[in-house]
Image 1 (cartoon, rainbow, N blue to C red):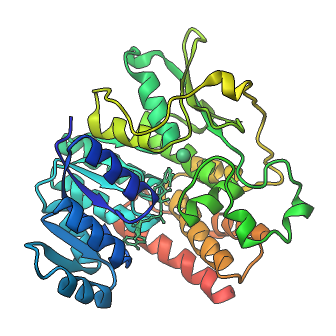
Image 2: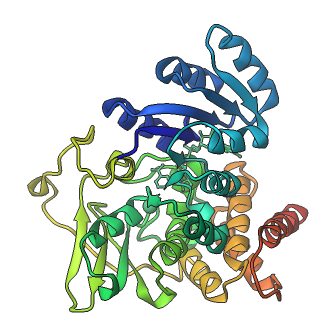
Length: 381
Ligand code: NAD
Ligand code: MG
């Protein structure tokens, strides 16, 4: 089990829950990073005594340095500082809880420094899956999924013979607008999109859940983690979010992982693997739930899942393009500048209009595709 962690994105939904788990199991925290929430970051530093801390914003870093002058903690700022926090503290595991493709470089820096990774930042694998998996292999480090569906699959796979996996079945809550038709989605508000039925999460992933983009990103994430093709990854709507995902084996046996919808369970499994320890989460009472329901996703009303599958089949930098377009579109939606239904259109257009003819994916080609996609969207809106 891990004894020292660095937490990137420690002030967010996953970051704060990671620290709760660390506290309960006396796991030492060696580095913390955040975008700009220095109030919370300062509290975290005072509670966990990391060796280094970093904020993206330069002004915020200067303020934090003054606030923490009584402590022997190194304060860094910007991307460079995040990379240092990922690679240079003496953590044996880096928990990546940053939101968006901004998490890709820190993941790579941590792997190259020989750290195991607990990965919540799915955009890392969506944009840079081929590079990340190559680095993981060549450095001999371990990558533990934190995303609840992928943790569920990882848990189901424990003890399964290597070649027995036939397919994975990702469950999806369906998000805020499950059951609605396209015409009803035209005028939904930001507040409605930010209201998730079962999970309390950061803003971006909550919007991604309501568009089904989150499940699309998770299909791509699963393809890298478990070596599955698009056809080997099923998605089933399961409103209760009690079954976190399943695997189907060669003999048609299906194995599922269940629990209350609480991210502290998958976070803890990544941190304490292979051990099973008491959790700060609640027990599941199935008699209280009563019934579990399943249905097919509505790909017509929610096109993002299908677009991500298309990007996965196209390969190369297409998943990075879909991700960049989505990040840009969600930002525009949250700023009140586009309609909810524009998100799917923007992502679809970005993938279908992108031209990529290179043979191999490199960090440069991913970065260029990401930039080009965002620039096109910015120029239009
Ligand atoms: P969040 O918005 O609550 O937190 C994001 C964290 O990243 C914050 O600490 C923020 O300061 C930091 N951050 C934001 N932009 C940054 C940047 N450009 N550079 C460096 N740091 C930056 O997000 P979250 O809900 O905790 O999600 C984090 C990641 O975990 C996402 O990739 C999300 O898809 C994934 N995830 C989240 C949940 C969940 O329940 N919240 C579940 C599964 C997967
Ligand atoms: Mg998930």
